[in-house]
Length: 358
Length: 175
Image (cartoon, rainbow over the protein chains, first blue to last red):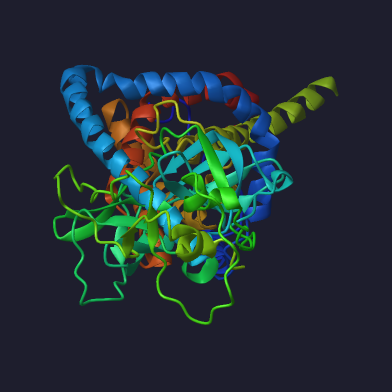
């Protein structure tokens, strides 16, 4: 069977290079590749660019087949999954309310403190046209390359979180090294606690956490993992996943599922931080509440935290709920809240003055 | 004269087919598209023509061509250069030493013979990658690739046998 019933040839060719010599070449190639990791990069990029029309053409039908195959296993668990998803939706709605309240509060504080906003991230939308799931390499191919502004090192995210980063960019295509890949190592921050660690992929589904810098700060399951931005490699604050305890080894359950992502964003962090936008009168809480604009204040050298004006009849913000438990307040740095006094607000309302103090 | 030209053309064609099939296997095996939703890694398709013709016609699948196919496998798969080239050469040395035994296998035994060689190839690659990264990669993906490769070989050997009988063998009647 192995030889197909055919007679075996004995002639091995007299002009062949010795096996040992070729093996030495191969080992030398490995060493050269270790020293210069981009040895094949240009050839790979050109090759993927060349194959991109075929990949684009095959993407749609194969995507349907893959989804169908992927859903086979879920058919038998639809009922249980439906119940679980209902509960999760209810819990996430509570979190959504909390997030909206906190987001609004943070924006107001940033406005009052003249905080420099996070740099605006430009991004390129790209479509996943290929996936490579080799034992020692997990990548995906995008249909955007240097012609669209994609560069190696940029973060790739989908609607749920970070997937990986660009490591090879051709003209029309680019390769993404997934967070789960053996070569992936990125600095991350664990919240709460601001613990700085390295997240290292090992070709398993959940990357491991490595090199804990603060040994006195114990890790625990449930901590949120975001990119730290250390080294300027990636933008800070990109959602990545949640810490899970895998038999004593802390790993990261990723939010994004790279196997099902179809459209992704390539985030350009090379853009410099933008200057803080000037506030208009309509942005100020006092004006938004229907009060007249305040006069420009005299120059100030040092000032106390700005109080927040509460419009007449408005109740102070209730403490947000955490994990669905009423009355559990999220510890945040809050400015003093004072009751609104219409007689004093035009002149003493620091919130109104804050906007004209630039 | 015409017959001589025909024989020469046939020799060239028969020499090209094994390596050409190896090249096609490299391209197909590393095409970044999964037909199974990424559930399992793709099979190591290129190992099949290497194994088959290294046993049946070692003059057509020489170590040099195995090195070339290994380098192409490294290039197309996106992994570190040289890993599969070295792994295939290590596997070839096993095949070269055990050619008579492997060629005498049939039926399930032939599949087991191929499985052993695939195990050597994957094991060598695993060892090299472990040293390369100084880190043990998980065994499950390599094991899955090995299983897929052996599974596909059960069907692939008939294709290779058919091609050999139809094109390679008759064109080189001196063997």
